[in-house]
Image 1: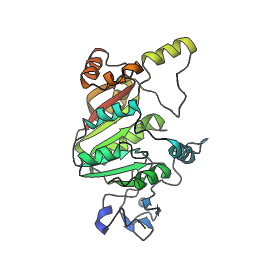
Image 2 (image 1 turned 135 degrees about the horizontal axis):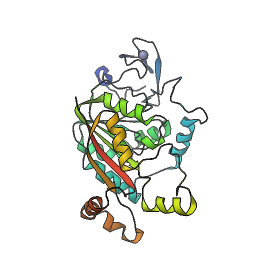
Image 3 (image 1 turned 60 degrees about the vertical axis):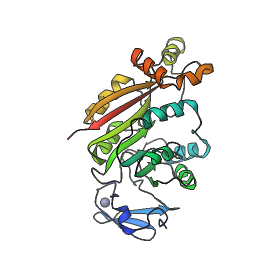
Length: 281
Ligand SMILES: [Zn+2]
């Protein structure tokens, strides 16, 4: 039953069929689309809107299991670079209704909850979502694919998507979906790893490869991520880098002053790129 997440019938009004975007009828253990009749089960209190016959699913990889395997072992809360990135994102969160795309185990969700009225968090991995739910974070957790968001047009004031775009088969489609679910003047806060860091450049020169081989399909620098957001219709208002160098001086890099100076002097070289983009019209 999803009763613990959705106490009253009206509480799922924001959900739609991720395929045809029609309204849903709630049954005891599933949601059913009022138009196309597709059914979406509720698994362990978590509505599962991962669509069947997903055209953006990888052909060669079992993406669901890949990320579920990831979700079993990872905990990112206390990692220095994530704390810094989280701080830079949270500084720019605005509005009352926030959607978090790719919430993982809720490492940022509990902080978003403190500054927002209503938080809905989704991820593709059911294991991550179970862990987030078990942590008793005051948000609604939903399984969804960011290429097919199961939310009404214009519902959210703000969307936070941290370190997701680089894993997607169609980043442009995901940005289009985010644009759709944002209200006019709504804000997207996006972070991606930067390909254009001194250590990556050095690795290219010395080893002819990147310095890590994680599950990334897309690679960005500040220019390409801004261009992509603009192509999806957003007006980009802010581009920041988070700088994480010199491990013995980590505390120094947590200083806003130091980050601001580095962003000003070397705007395109930080480890992570954070952009704030607004939906206009
Ligand atoms: Zn439908």
